[in-house]
Image (cartoon, rainbow, N blue to C red; front, side, top):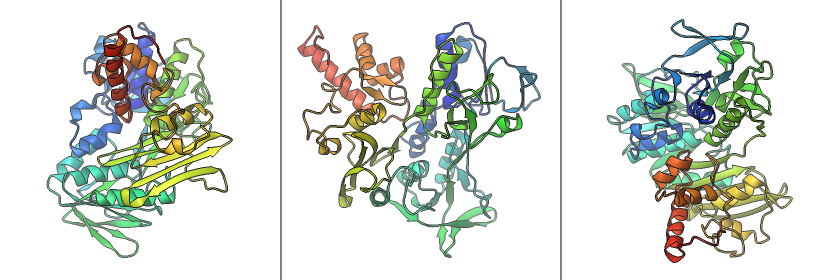
Length: 475
């Protein structure tokens, strides 16, 4: 039984069914909608993707695969002694193995006025629809939160023609992923795209007239007019069910290397509600990695989860950004190589320790992101020419993010753990475009940051087929 049908829960269900056609699978989803790719909500908000195009499964998939999907049914209680769950309508359902994939909820600041009409948290597809409806009649918007989700929302609203201001408490944007200098470059870049940002700004409440929001107040007395206020202040793991059931909870449900609760071997947790070795992951790639490993374990395998390396990509029109690992370290703590050209919106930084890449930031020009991700994921030795890590093509001897020099084992899609070799195999089986590769391997269906690389590999394979019909000489 899986409680939660978001990106982690739905992936686990599909992974389980792919491995075992006979297992009885029940999945509860609090949202009535089919599972969808939450990463792409910013694209929906910007109007470049339709809500119906971000689904993770076809509506008929559950019936076709004999999965008991109870969508729109929230689980409200777990009885570990009787091994049952109770849903909001009072239905009691037994389980043999329980997996919690309850995700996270948006942080709602306890401030006056935030219950007014026109104030919306940005977390779900319904939230996205509400924001789009409000934006149609709005001229100005305030986005509270300058993290990944807040900036994506701000860029999407600016693309709809609204005057947008981002209010961010920390001293620079995306402080969890970027250092202060990179945050400043990003602030200038997003400003050039029509989004005003206020950093080090504390919200004290919202103003409203006749129940409708008219603006927000800051602690220095500033009042920002707004017809729409979007809250993107962070997320909090949904652990209420687990805590009420007596499971150990830190920030998330504490699990071991088999993704089992440390209290009950019949209860597992994955995704944003799970805490492994002190870490709660908030990105799609770790959630899908956990789903794959747990599916292996539940079907007789012996995999272990050893933690995930997180790579963040900002998905907003006009902004190229990738960040990974320990980005805030300085020259006194590690070997740091950086390049900055703020006027052109470019910032590059790699952090190296013991000849291994432990962190990187790329803003404005990200052609070496694939190479850096490979080095970071594998903890592989970095080349002696450090500039080749920052600038594509400076070191021809270095395996780079070009299809011909990329080994078959190189990971192209980190979200779905898809290698160049799997894309090559898809091509050799007849796949000729990104849609074919996505259908066969799921590459590009996570954050979408690998799409250009996949297209480049397909283009190169097409050239190889013309110049070398036997497809010999694999790299």
